[in-house]
Amino acid sequence: MIAGLARRLGLPDSEADEVAQQSLSEFVRAYREGRYDRQKGRLSSWILGIAHHTALRAIRRARVIGPAGSSVIDEVPDESALRSIWTDERDRTILGRAISMLRDESTVDDRTLLAFELVALRGVPAAEAAAQSGMSVDQVYVAKSRITKRLREMVEQLTTAFEEDV
Image 1 (tube, rainbow, N blue to C red):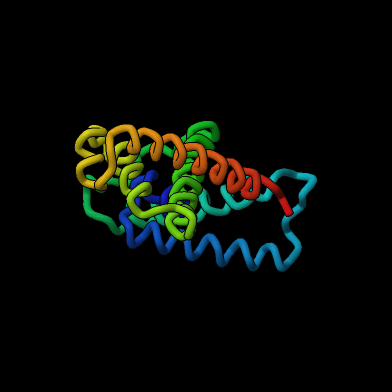
Image 2 (cartoon, one colour):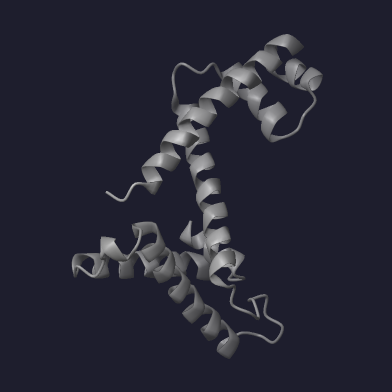
């Protein structure tokens, strides 16, 4: 999520990954020092603040030493825009994790998952997805519905777990 935030702020992949590492290091150090105060806000907001400041330092460095016309943003997003980017990255990360967990479930048939991925994620027409997965068109629609329902449940569970400040 942190690397995604940094990329959305205009940093290249290598610098975004460095921002993520530095942010997590800073978080662990500050948390161990007892600097997180639950009364002042959510843990995710605190981590977002650390990531934001770390990314801004990287952006400033890129402006100083980077080439003219760098792709790094010219204006720092306001709190609302930053929160929106963070939420988008959170949702993208949670969906990716849920899909990964779904693939690991032994109860999900490979053909069913393939049909879902083709229709729901890649936008392939149902008839073509049926041919590629060895299913009927009706079976593809059932697979899409079944997997979508399971994926929604998993995303809800992961989102709840993420939002809890434990």
